[in-house]
Amino acid sequence: MSVLDAVMWTVHVAFAALWTGSVLFVVATILPSATAGEIGSEAFGSIVDRLRWITRISAVAFLASGGHMAGTRYDVGTLTGTGNGHLVLTMLGLWVVLTGLVEVAGSKVESGVDEGKLREPARDAKPFFLAAAAVAVLLLITAGLLASNALA
Image (cartoon, rainbow, N blue to C red):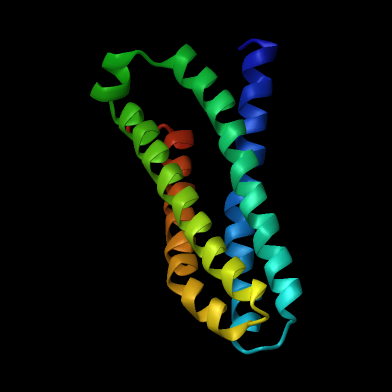
């Protein structure tokens, strides 16, 4: 493994941990507080805005690092014809879905918080955040399967 490969793996895993962990943290701790009216709308909006930025920056990091890793480890045949290739494609699909869910939830929060509301935007965004948490867990499971070489 080259130094570049090691850097790409590190960047990929670091952003995966940051992103999935941030989604799960927001869903487990911040969202319940917002739906109960226990935090300020500005704080809630700020946290969700940061989550959206983490999502966007992670997307760029994943495109660069994952693209490098896929390009050096897979060709079309191994990507579409092996278990690990299928896991890589599954991760890509889940990554796109998670990005969309966070963006939709963030938009719902942003529009409500801009009007000075808290509970309503939190409730409106909740299904999208819950789905995002489920997808984040699926991404972690898929990453574990890929790392363990379970479907090689």
